[in-house]
Amino acid sequence: MTENWIDEYHLGVRYGLQGKVLIQEASDVQEITVIESVRYGKGLLLNGCWMTTEYQEKQYHECLVHPALCSAAEIKKILVIGGGDGGTARECLKHKEVQHIDMIEIDNRVIELSKEYLPSIGGNAWNDPRLHLTIGDGIAWAANAENNSYDVVLVDGSDPIGPAEGLFNKTFFENCKRILKPNGIFATQSESPEAFQQIHIDIVRLIRDVFNYSDPLYGWVPIYPSGWWSWTFACIDAPRYLNPLKKRASVISDQCEIWSPRWQKGAFQAIPAFLEREFEK
Amino acid sequence: MTENWIDEYHLGVRYGLQGKVLIQEASDVQEITVIESVRYGKGLLLNGCWMTTEYQEKQYHECLVHPALCSAAEIKKILVIGGGDGGTARECLKHKEVQHIDMIEIDNRVIELSKEYLPSIGGNAWNDPRLHLTIGDGIAWAANAENNSYDVVLVDGSDPIGPAEGLFNKTFFENCKRILKPNGIFATQSESPEAFQQIHIDIVRLIRDVFNYSDPLYGWVPIYPSGWWSWTFACIDAPRYLNPLKKRASVISDQCEIWSPRWQKGAFQAIPAFLEREFEK
Image (cartoon, rainbow over all chains, first blue to last red; front, side):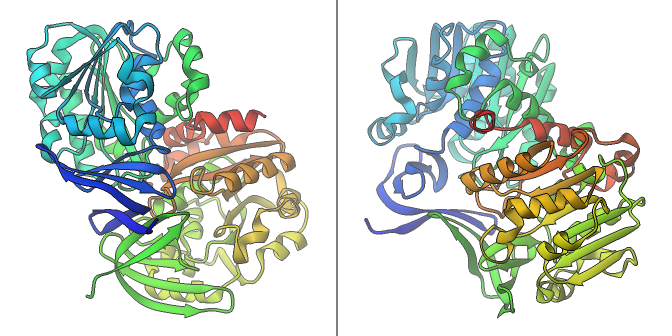
């Protein structure tokens, strides 16, 4: 195969994988690129930004899903907004208590191309009868869903520029709180504390304004800008996300590469000093 | 300025900064490159690998130094092996209890170029009478130093290929233990758990073979391969590195961007599940 470099450019920094482009097309929503890389297998970019790769996706999906699904009071009914590669649904479905997932993805081509080129990321999720997929606008879904109707709400969107912009504002977070059960957990990816520092701070602040309890958790997604990433968790009745339930954790721990109860505890504490000071203001 | 890209290549991945090369020369030891980048100011590469930049160096230096210097029983006499940019010495000297640092750097040109192009990294360290600089081989220094003669030994070397190779073997670690006081702390950078996974595992195992207590700590250095980095701490009489002393922490906390007692606690816990299992074998 002809070895080129496929790079994401961000603020005078570039991160590239050696490989070749398999597909490049404009969907109704965005530019989609599927590549095959030497290091991480096949991968997906949206609007030129790295989204996921076959061999480096657990760093993201496990860290969004399990701190929420191991810690919420119940996990029968889940809402996933975004997540078109299928990895978030796959991790949710590892929990046998999950009965119903509504997944709202805005771009059907992301799902079609993920199924075709990245089938290991969705795995069996696509055929699991518990997964209910809707192609549509997650923001509208959150605005229209019933009060107290979900145990967990997960936002697995791209950067807050382009189609995902509306996933990072107060009205959206207020709707997520409204549709969440009082003992449930809300979680969203919340960008890099380094490469998107101000955006990260703004997201955490907004979520704290809306929810009673909220904390960022810090981890690694090497293909994303700076490699240093965050997810923010929020609750209504207590900071449940700090305490994974042993019963659920013990069932899925062996299947995880990154997440563990110990890792989760550490990742909520590993906040850099400048951000701890920033959030105390 | 002509905007080019200066990249480090590693296993089918590249990480580049936009900028220009200021100096490129071969010293007696290695190839040295000094660049000026748009994003992080001036920066240093050794043998084509990112070492440090003006505006992204605290992620590394604070994380190597303060878990050791805040937690050792005493910190009067310190050995720094490597650290030619001066950042490790600068962080050590923030602690007023430090009376004497022996710093052994193999490449005088790294020091000269760091003083000229990256003066903010060494800061006042170069003029501090407590800093005793020797140009020479840190491995030989560790072999020849007296038993129980240092409160803290810090290894701030490059990757275990080329001049730094001897900083990652059992004889060297045994000497570090021998010259350390029984209530002291040893610390070394221990590579990326992602980009240098097997090397990281081997380093941690070797140090655990030699010392009575040892644990890796995980953090971020976005300019290094994968952005995900580790440092490994070791003790003889107790795992002192887990408990920073309040008295020292309170003095330096306000001067730190990354390190805090809370961050330190989290970073020792944020071990990914696959490595926790690997180290239990």
